[in-house]
Image (cartoon, rainbow, N blue to C red; front, top):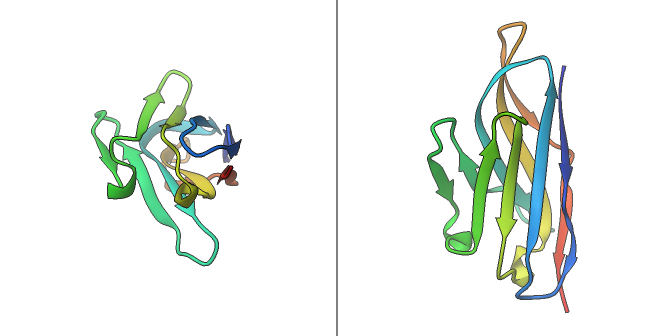
Amino acid sequence: QVQLVESGGGLVQPGGSLRLSCAASGSIVSINTMGWYRQAPGKERELVARIRRSGSTDYADSVKGRFSISRDDAKNTVYLQMNSLRPDDTAVYYCNVGVLTTRLEYLGVWGQGTLVTVSS
């Protein structure tokens, strides 16, 4: 019904940058909040950043000043620009999108995850 496709993960050295993308497609009427979460080995999934339809944003304290979330509503896509990456940013990053479908259902949809590894 609604699919999310994530891209942009990979291996980067400490201090480097990566840009994640997440594109939504399917039976979409509108999209509300779009966000990125991450889960490191042995840890719980945590919010990294989210952006509302209004454009207001929230960030985890650990990424403030280094990461930036943005969205392109024409493309149903959310981005996460990650700068000054650190080894403790290593995790699987998941996109989450709040979607109103053509069935007038409000769904929270998760992406498949993309691995980000920060290592020298």
